[in-house]
Amino acid sequence: MNKGFLSGFLYLFCIFNIFRGEPRFLNPCLDSVCLSQTVTYKCESGSPFLLRWRVLDTNGRQYALTVAYIDGNSISRIDPIGNEFTTVLINTTGVIVSTITFTAVININNYLIECGPDFITLVNCSIVIPDILPAPVANPLTFGSTHFTFSWSPSTGQCFTNYAVSITSSVSNVTYVTNDTSLVIPISKSFNDTEYSVSIGAVDTGGRYNSSEVIRFTPNVPLFVTNLMLTQTDYPTDTNETVNITVSWNEPQSSSRPPATHYKIQYNISNEIQNKSTNVTSQTLSGFSVGLVYTVSVEAVNVLGTGTVTSATITIIIATLLPPETSASVSSLTSYIISSTPSTTQTTPSVSVTEGCNCASSTTVPIVVSVSVTFILTAILSSTLSIILTLLCVRSRSNKPVEQVKPVEQVKRDEGGTTASVAVYDEITTTKGGATSSVPLTSNPAYGPLRN
Ligand SMILES: *[C@@H]1O[C@H](CO)[C@@H](O)[C@H](O)[C@H]1NC(C)=O
Ligand SMILES: *[C@@H]1O[C@H](CO)[C@@H](O)[C@H](O)[C@H]1NC(C)=O
Ligand SMILES: *[C@@H]1O[C@H](CO)[C@@H](O)[C@H](O)[C@H]1NC(C)=O
Ligand SMILES: *[C@@H]1O[C@H](CO)[C@@H](O)[C@H](O)[C@H]1NC(C)=O
Ligand SMILES: *[C@@H]1O[C@H](CO)[C@@H](O)[C@H](O)[C@H]1NC(C)=O
Ligand SMILES: *[C@@H]1O[C@H](CO)[C@@H](O)[C@H](O)[C@H]1NC(C)=O
Ligand SMILES: *[C@@H]1O[C@H](CO)[C@@H](O)[C@H](O)[C@H]1NC(C)=O
Ligand SMILES: *[C@@H]1O[C@H](CO)[C@@H](O)[C@H](O)[C@H]1NC(C)=O
Ligand SMILES: *[C@@H]1O[C@H](CO)[C@@H](O)[C@H](O)[C@H]1NC(C)=O
Ligand SMILES: *[C@@H]1O[C@H](CO)[C@@H](O)[C@H](O)[C@H]1NC(C)=O
Ligand SMILES: *[C@@H]1O[C@H](CO)[C@@H](O)[C@H](O)[C@H]1NC(C)=O
Image 1 (tube, rainbow, N blue to C red):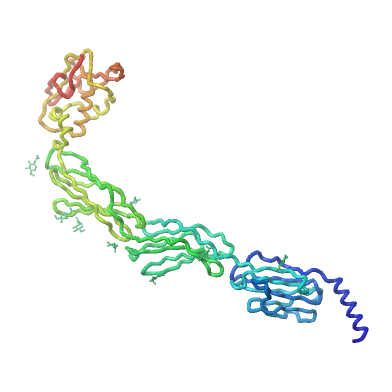
Image 2: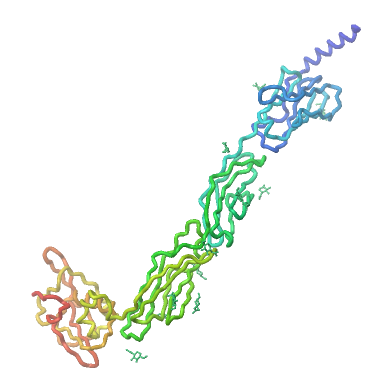
């Protein structure tokens, strides 16, 4: 070795030591790295002579070989560290600069990348791969008439890519991929009476996911309708008349069954099956004959088919076959025509009394009715009238025949501590065919005992 070389070397060594700075990464280390993500870190060694790359494994031991670049290596030189890392020499003018590039795979999780001019002065970046994303929380399924909707809580994970909806059954296993937080699935006939399992996972960039709780359901035709009611709407006096009935029901329970789109109604008129279809839960049916018993059946229909039948029976009755307690209380009135028109009667003010009628001056109270053998009053009108007449205090103040009921005064009485208001009316005069007749109020059992 000659002296000149040695002194020159020492001189240069001193210069380089003076110029040497601290190593640093020229781009920041990432807190975490998603699987499949490619990352490049650029390091400036701080030395014009040397740059070293070293990777440590999860146990802090050196992984594969180290790489060292010196001034004089050709720019763009590429070197591997194991299969996962690639280093490139970028610059040797001034301090040495190099990059390291890797694509994240699970086996380099928690590895450490080190860079520096030697193995003492180092900077490092650790590789942190986030855990599998937590499974979204599945919401209960909702059923439309032709589809069902599955929805879930959103995922906020950094490495989220999409949702995987798994729908499995004995007939098919399908996984839907979506970015939305809900999925609408059409229901076809093949779903009928087959158990399906639905679950959801939030897939990360590595394709990993944990599945949510599994929701199981078995689509089927509707259950039976409930609360089926048949109601006769009119009560004829002529047994030859046909009547209407209303049929009403409540929609069937629909848990995991697509809702009903419409209802089928069947009933027999003269041994011919009548078919009606409706999308609401009540219907008026006509053509029912007095004295006969009818069965009406209702079935709910959904996209999968027709549900279980529900039936009810009704006996069609005429006005005189009303329940006994009603007919007893109006028996003496149903034989009469009372000429006060229904509309007038219905507009009389409502009267509230706590006891029977007690009118001071009504000694002779003629109620003028004409006698008829025809049953005209409907059950409703009869009972309404009987109630009104029972409550009315009817007295005569003039002999002038009137054809309507008019309230003339209202009095308030105290009766045993109970205040009751009583409307006092002009006499009720009824006519038929010009003939009039008077019936003393005392003789009519409908009014109860008269008091003075
Ligand atoms: C290398 O570094 C020198 C000095 O910092 C700079 O002038 C030059 O442009 C760099 N070359 C490359 C290829 O980055
Ligand atoms: C990585 O660098 C930090 C400072 O940036 C240091 O505290 C830590 O000890 C280093 N880790 C290892 C394993 O050298
Ligand atoms: C994912 O599922 C595995 C196995 O069931 C479980 O050990 C892990 O804790 C789950 N991870 C998350 C984030 O839910
Ligand atoms: C769907 O997967 C389940 C179990 O994962 C299996 O029992 C079933 O037979 C599969 N169905 C089809 C149609 O492949
Ligand atoms: C989800 O969103 C990403 C980014 O917007 C898009 O590239 C991808 O195709 C979407 N996937 C689906 C299944 O829509
Ligand atoms: C009912 O009709 C029959 C024949 O259709 C007739 O003989 C009878 O008189 C009718 N009855 C009434 C109350 O109208
Ligand atoms: C019976 O129903 C028919 C048709 O639904 C209607 O035209 C008729 O007015 C109804 N009759 C009564 C008494 O309500
Ligand atoms: C209607 O009548 C037919 C024959 O009388 C009978 O077979 C059928 O069960 C009846 N249907 C209903 C809904 O009552
Ligand atoms: C009603 O449907 C039945 C079969 O469900 C059919 O036999 C009957 O003729 C239909 N009735 C009418 C009036 O169309
Ligand atoms: C029933 O059907 C009519 C027309 O077909 C539609 O306008 C109505 O919204 C439906 N009602 C219900 C309760 O589905
Ligand atoms: C659906 O399944 C139910 C129960 O097994 C069955 O009664 C019904 O007929 C089926 N409907 C159709 C349209 O296949």
